[in-house]
Structure formats: C-alpha cells, structure tokens
Amino acid sequence: MKIIVHGGGAQIGGTCIEVAAGKTRLILDCGWPLESDDNPTPPAVPGLFARGTRPDAVLLTHAHPDHTGFITEMPPDVPIHATVGTSKMMLAGSYYTPNGVKIPRDRFCEVAVPKPREASRSFPIGDLNVTAYPVDHSAYDSVAYLVEHGGKRVLYTGDLRFHGRKPGMSQRLSRELRGKLDLLITEGTNVGRASAGLRAEAEVEARALEVARAHPSLVMVAFSPQNIDRFVSFYRAAKRAGRTFVGDHYLLGVLHLLALRSLPKPGIADDLRFYFPKKRNRIAKIEPFAGERTITRDEILAEPHRYIMLTRPSILRDFAGVLPPKTQVLYGMWSGYRERPDWREAEAMIADAGGEIASCHASGHAHELPLFSFIGELEPAKILPVHTTSQVIFQQRFGAKCIAACDAQYTVEL
Ligand SMILES: [Zn+2]
Image 1 (cartoon, protein in one colour):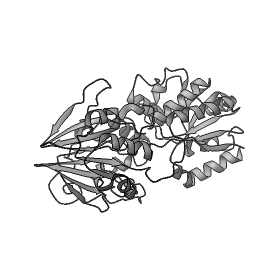
Image 2: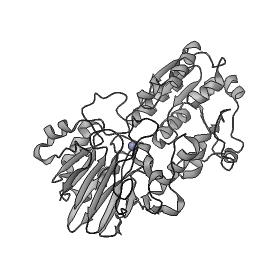
Image 3: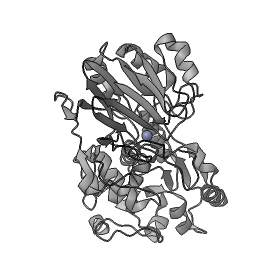
Image 4: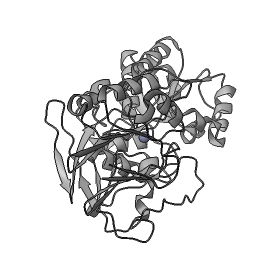
C-alpha cells in the first residue's frame, strides 16, 4: 500500500490524502486550506487536479470546507463517497453560506454508518476494502475510514474529539482495531496548543443555562447551525431555563434536511421558533416548514428575557439601534472569526447597548491528552499525524513509531 499526503500534512486544513494499492487509488478528503485567499490552488493530485489517470473515488470524512472544498474542481466522473449526514450538511451549506459546496446527486455514493449495536460494514472499491467508523466531531455524521489491502490496514481518523455530546463514539475504533493497524493517520489540531475555552460540550450547556437563568435580558448565541451538538447544548439550556429558542432560516434548513427524530421538529416543537433576517438567502421550498412558529423582531423586543436567540453579524444588523439593553451574547465558534470586520462591528453594537459578548465554546478537536491516550490504546505500528503543526510533539511522545509528513506529496509505503 502506498499513502501520499497531497495536502494538510503540516498545516491545519487543506487535507487531501491518497491511499493506493493494486490498481486502485482512493482520495480521502479534498479540502481548502483554512487560511487561504479567495482562489486557493488545489493540490497536484494526478487525475484530479494534475495530469494522470483518474482515482477510483473520493471519500469525505465530514462536511467542513477544509476537508471538502475542492470537490467542485474535480473532473465530473469521479464518484464521491460520504455519509448521508455529510451530504445533507453540505447541501445546507450550499444554500446558506457564500462558499458552500454540495455533492452532485449523480456522483454521491452513500457510506453507511453502523448504529451503536450493529456490526461494522465494509465495502470494496476496486482492490481496496473500506469501512467507515462514526467519530465525534463538531460536524454532524463524521466518520473515520479504515482502508485494507493484502492484510495491511490503514486508519484515517478525519477530525475527531472525545468531549462532544457522544464522547463514547470512538470506542468502537479501539475495540475493533486495537493492535491491528499498520498505520494510523490522525489529526492533531490541538496538540501543542494551550487549551482555550471550555473542556467539554456538556460545559457549554451548563454555562449557557447559568446565564439564561440569571440574566434579565435577551441572550444571544453565536454558533454555526451545522454544529448540531452545539445547537442541542443551547436548545437544552433554553428549555431548562424556561426560555424559547429562536433559530434562523439556516438552522431551519439544517433541521428540515436532517429530519432526525432526536431533534425538535420545526413548525411543531413549541419551544423552537424562527426569526428570518431581512437579508438572507431565501430557499422558498424550506421556509414554509417553520409553519406558525416564526417570530418577528418586535415580538422579541417586547419580551427579550423569554428567548435564547441564534445570532451572527447579519442578524444583529436587523437590531441596530434597538438591541435590548444588556443583551448577553455567548460566542460558540472559533475565536479567529471575532477579529473579522463584521464581528468587530457587531461587538461595537453590543457594547453600545450595554451588552457583553463572552466565549462559550468547546473545541471541535481532541485535546492532546485524550488524543494521545486514544492512540496509545489503539497500538498502531506507525503513526502519521496530519492536520497539525506539532508533529514534533507527536515524535517526542511516540518516538520512532511516528512519521512526520512535512512536505507536500509526502509518501509512505507499507
Ligand atoms: Zn472538521
């Protein structure tokens, strides 16, 4: 087996990894670099973005653009494998975010994910055998991929963590693959980074509940509607504090497309209403699903203490000059976005209303200690860290077992 890191080896984002054996080539993830300009250049993958024969398939671990962004630039005859959840989240992203990409229906191959008590299911692609394992990450329905050929086994984790709302999700990996992996390709986003924010998703709910109970005014929460764990944390906090959760058109789209029984149903659930910002992408076939459960700005302003409301700069603009005094904003995203001009403007507006913005966030990626103990439990023969700038720390911890992909096109032969 041959593994080539085409992108995202020694950086966070831009992940693109090839696994090849026999006559088959698979590409695992195909994302934009995170800190890129408007026109990032795709990695030189033969048959995708450079001359050469077509790979047999692209497999996506989850919907985040740093793992999926370049799929629109691929030749149109390469099949794209992903979970249904990933495909739906990408569809929602394509409706409501400026750069969202979706998987064309005729190229989508569904990757089945086993329920907790079901056996893992593998499927062949050419000469390789693939098995998807559910993992906990801030993107809904994320998976890791096991790729096997001729008795060799490679596991690529994608992005993962152990402190979301389903922290036990990765137990299947250690149960089934302990001591059996020739190579573990793992993310290491938070390795070597001082841990900022809250340690676990459960703490996000607890902090939001505390604020919702004590605060006499409007509580707003800033997070990506794609982050279902985060929605559940804030929605539960609202419920427990006796407030109504107010979502927006984007959250409505996500909940409608996912249609999960474990989530509140738009238009039906009493404690979930929707505010449609003036400036928005209107998807006519989705908005009616809010039914009678829409809410106007004036209704929110009349009794602000009754709501926890999803926000972002474009929503806040509708409240310019009328934001309820002492509005409290809980910020549940990557802190880097707050440096951007639209958030700076939003922060000034919140301050003008005598309000406050406070971080209420837990990382979508594993903390160093739990990640290292997970790797220790798996006992892989070799470790290839990607999606990290801290390979050195992996090498210090795992010694000669650890291979560091420092250059583009870094290749490992098994
Ligand atoms: Zn991710």
